[in-house]
Structure formats: structure tokens, C-alpha cells
Image (tube, rainbow, N blue to C red; front, side, top):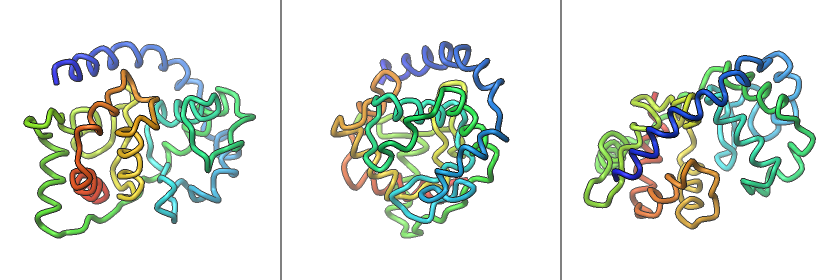
Length: 206
């Protein structure tokens, strides 16, 4: 747990400085045009209609730019994205990210079943000390808005199916582009029920 918190502090300091200039130069208007190719899966304004594709609207700029570049460079493997961003420059990635950041985020609704909702809230707000799982809110914010300076994504309103699939990929080591392997360490300590519960809670968080 202490190792995870120390990694968080280091990341917060280093990443914000590295990306400040890139984000300042991002052109959302240029990004709107470049993002037209994203609409088929992620929606015209970043609200996806299919749970296998994440909502991009309202996402943190630094996180989204990093994901586009990582997918382009093969650091994050997403079969559905094969070839989609191969011709993107770094500037294109930042421009598209800036466009989606400016769109209104999706407002979801959690399943109100009390037991699952309470467990999801517990994990998100407080974590599970016995399992060594830190609170999701520490990195993703009380309202799920993320932390732009640390490249931690917004989660609010995201599809539960997508969140569960992402946690499973981290736990299995199939996704490894998280800072200092933090999400891999955390997800590996979560049961399937934990993943389902926190994903449900996140879907209604705003």
C-alpha cells in the first residue's frame, strides 16, 4: 500500500510538468475534424452506444492523448483499434484528446441493488485494507473526474462492462501501460465480484 501511494506522489510531480506545454498547444478545433473517424465506435461527441467501446467525452486530456499514442506505438494492444490511429502524429493525438475533453461527459446510472452498490462504494471511497486495495478515489477523484496532471483517467459514467473488462486485462497482465504498474497490482487483488461492484458504482458516479 505504501509503495502504491509513493508511486502516486512521484507520478503527480513528474508527469504534470512533462505534459503542460503539449496540452497548452492542443487544438480542439483541429481535433474535432480528426476525431470524425472515431465516431463510428465512440459516438459523434464521445458518447458511445456500445458497452465494448468506452465513452471519451469529458475524459482527461493527458490520459486520452497518452492512450492514443500508446495504441499507435503498440504499447497498448486494442484489436478494435488496429490501424485506426497509425497515421496520427503526437499533435493529432493531443488535438483529438482536447476535443473530447471539451464534450459533456456521459451521465450513467448504477444498479441500485443495495449490497452490490454498498460494496462498490466501499471500494471506491475507502478501498479494502485487508486485501491491500487502495481507494479508487485517491487517483480518480471523489466524483470520478480523474487527475489530469498525473494522467489518471476520469471514470464517471463509464460502462460497467468496459470497466470490468479493463480491470480483468490489468489483472491478467494483458494491459501494462499504467504508471509504475499500479493498476496491475491493484486489479490482481480484486475478485470478480469486487470488479463488478466497483464498476457498477462508477457507472452512476458524477
